[in-house]
Picture (tube, rainbow, N blue to C red):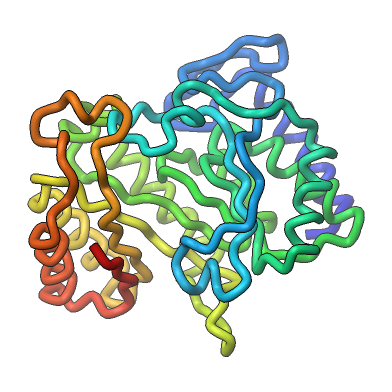
Length: 295
């Protein structure tokens, strides 16, 4: 998308903040007048960190790393959130879209393969504005939208032609579990609709000859202790919907962060056997485009 089109899209996105419905919660608050909704984000952009990160999946991090931008605030309340000072407490630095655009240019100069916006859902207008500001000065990197998967098709429509790679979570298919651990009982339905829209826009992840992805969707699922049945349901749903070649990252880095340390069953790390069960489930379902982690 050219810069002029990006600027028009940014202006359109900013207007949505007058009655914010960027995520499925649809709070409807007027963020342009200083109101904040469930996520805690207002009109000002708050960024917790901008750095080159080497811990993403190989097609994202490659050899030079992914240029990550950690936004503050989140539209979910996961009791095990590993980034809770950022997502729940709002730790971060106020920054204009122009300032963030300069930081994006800095990531490109450092050799990052892409820019990777983490927890971007409440910040879609600012994301577009920052990309526009950077493009005006020659920025060329692919844009990664790294979300919890609780996104609305309306907000995602604003990103069509802006985002090259979608990296969403597929956390749950059970409303009760989604409510108990993330205060988001309608997550499964909205997540399914959001992922479908992402695939419509860019298709499945397809790394180039150098192994680096420049376009497509890569889904992520975090295996949770004691919830192996939920993982089986998630993987079965993805297999049924998208087929055996669905790009999937099966993550095993759970640990009892934030409030999880006081919740029975979630107050421990994932065991190797639990993760291996998830891996075996993927194999049994015929999923053969899966990124695995070492426990």
